[in-house]
Length: 255
Image 1 (cartoon, rainbow, N blue to C red):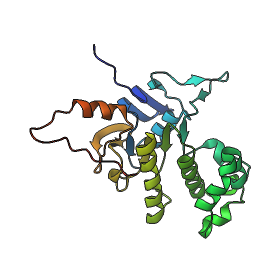
Image 2 (image 1 turned 45 degrees about the vertical axis):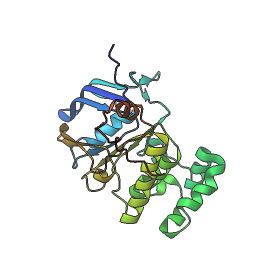
Image 3 (image 1 turned 90 degrees about the vertical axis):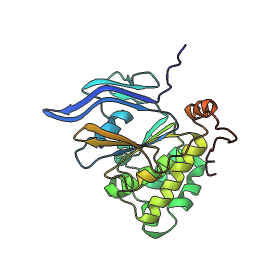
């Protein structure tokens, strides 16, 4: 008896239109658990629209999207209610909040507030953000704050739009280390979008390239390492045939 592949997201015949403009048309896309995906495309390629649909911020015009083999539920007003274990860095609730950043972090993380302050807001220009109202900060600062929350909430699925667009090299390296650590130690499924693959190709396992709303190609990342928390990886390792007098070579994940 054949076992059905376990998927986090399954997209089929997915389309999103804004009036007469067809922003997205994906015939098929499967996202597996415990894997890092990079969505690559220039402005207008549909990558933000795709992440908005995965996050439940927008609904598709036609086609289906399944999360754990289930469609997203809707509330009485017809608005999508995505699962609480899916976190989107472009959080609309966050960007419209009248709370200060310190107050928002306290409401979300409680006693961990001081740890987060010391970790991210203890020096440089970011120190001045701590007591500012969220609705008054710039889009770049909102993006950065969303990235911080993404790394601290420990979701099952993490969605990050415009990865690295507001970062310098040092910041990108720090966040990359945190993201890969989440993936390897917790098995977090991560989907990130960027305008090019300069950064993502070094730590994403799968790169999905979009062009005018269509998937133009899918490629493996340069540094494709197995995830021991991924059930698919364990199954494939057990089935892998050994060569004579050789043991299968397995790259150990970094701690």
